Image (cartoon, rainbow, N blue to C red; front, side, top):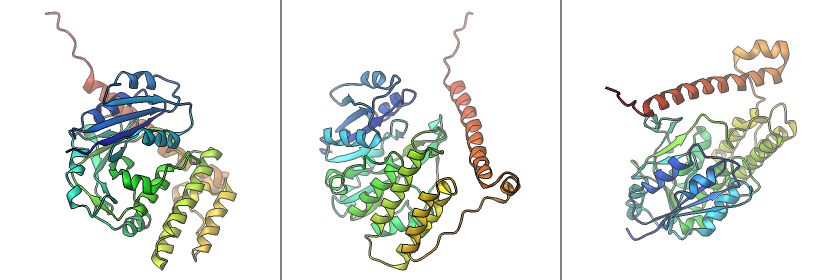
Length: 340
């Protein structure tokens, strides 16, 4: 119980969520913790709200807008903890998250073991978070974890991880060239630098979904370039594993999953992925749109059909988000005073 844990929170224009996120960090039952919030030049009230929590336990600093990776690196430079907990400004930690994982340290091989745990997705109402186990919710060797992720197109939410300072330093800093998928690239390096993943049930993380954010690629050329670079770097990292057909096939599957993001609007980037697949001994298939969009493709072309394919899910998510927001406010409104 003597080891200090640093909870590091980068924040940009997060006034709607930052207070709840900080409260979830303060509510951690692990007694020795510090919370460091780096405001990345927000244009809203994020910094003012965060400063209300400033105390001996909570440090709040600000910087000119330079991106999430720069903010995370600054937070780590200020951290004193022996263990590191990354936390985005709109996500939440269950109260026992850090305690549950820290209590599992005696079952870890060394300080190079990285701990993970459960995560559930929600929009406004965290009690409605859905926790759905998958193949990464297991104790795994680094190579097995990385290959399963790509073979089965799986995801692990960044706040699930808890890692030692030693492992954090071994993995290296966040790549400040990346404005998108910087977490995918970073945690690939973390896993490779580790001696294994220890999955600890019960330490819950609440992952807020349904909002356009840095994770939304859209049609921005700058974001697409960041995504393409992050993909190339992740393949480069995974190829440091002992060469095998399974490693090459997993890399090709990862490239195939992302090809439609660039094709056909950004053919130069798509060609980069296809060239990389050829270096891995295979060819990528040209993306195919679902059958229900074929009539749009025939009438208006591939680009129009792809736009519609991207637009429809966003409309659905918007409707779900609005409904959940309505229910959230109904459940949390103040009771009216009785005049009787």
